[in-house]
Image (tube, rainbow, N blue to C red; front, side, top):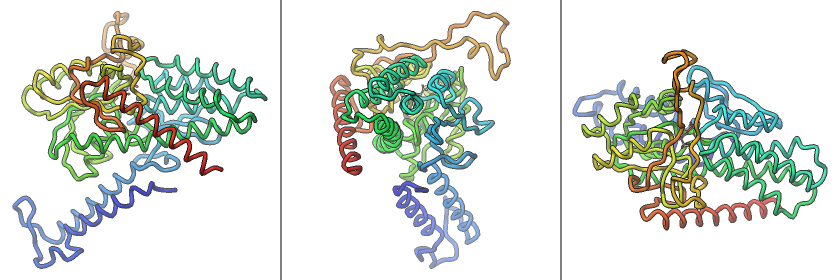
Length: 437
Ligand code: MRU
């Protein structure tokens, strides 16, 4: 399955547009010359425009999920996947300088990869946790159901501790454990297959969810918008397509002209290293900015909306996201700029009443005192390095999910989105079982 079928109409549409512009379809062949931005352009320029359109179409299609990633620049990818009985993932620590696929055949290895940010971004961490559970089942020596359940409970504990803030990890490991606990399957081999199938389903659903979320969010973004984006929320932060960047990719597919201000996102520089890389590959106009430039851009009217993902959303709509998000949201409100969080429902944690209950990860001080292994502060400097912050819901204009756009009061709209998603998961599971029978 080289391409998802949804890519075909998009490609067709782009070729049609390109052809129309270059008079393939006879719409402009009455004259040898036409105008562009008030300027006369001739056939050679139209051919160049056509080539540019085809190239752009290629890049859009290149983001469509394939059954497997191709290891190389300019190719499509899944951030995390299962192959040869191993969990494989794009090593995000070395991007954009190198493109490397890391592979793990132990649960501790997978947990270490999450902790060291080989893989990162809430939905990507969730899918990795699911594959980690499937891996635990595959390599377990257990020969009965109870033995396998013990293996899975131990694996879940190891995986869940890898990173505390993104709830998607716990959400995914719980989904696999519950499947094993509630299944009617008694045969261990069947149970192993069912767990791997569930992990694959989580990964596949993630791509589909992100596309739905992207197009839901695109409704909020007018043509010509300047968006301010924090951290990395693209294909790399999910299994594919992404959350907040998914909205921008969806806008591009709709033909909207969007420009993105890309926060570099200190200390780990996900914006500079990953978001800039993804946007440039997709040929979406952007500028990389120092985090400290954001307030100035907002005050001087250069930002139409602030958009980001999230690692956990509490029941009242408080949003935990990459450190620095809160500051952006406060300044945005001061300047009457809308603030959009784009999250799959797996990121919503209705068990927590508000953001004060969200655990905030603290990471190694070297992430602040060093860049690329080089010290930028005096040797031995004391550092405090919280990786996330909480933005109170009063600063959030809307929370975009795959089930629709949630508006205040979030307590009600988030609950409805969660319920709709749960119904969909059950229906999908039933359909899969029926297909198999
Ligand atoms: O520390 P990271 O890189 O895992 O943090 C990621 C983010 O904060 C993202 O913005 C978040 O996961 C939401 S989007 C996928």
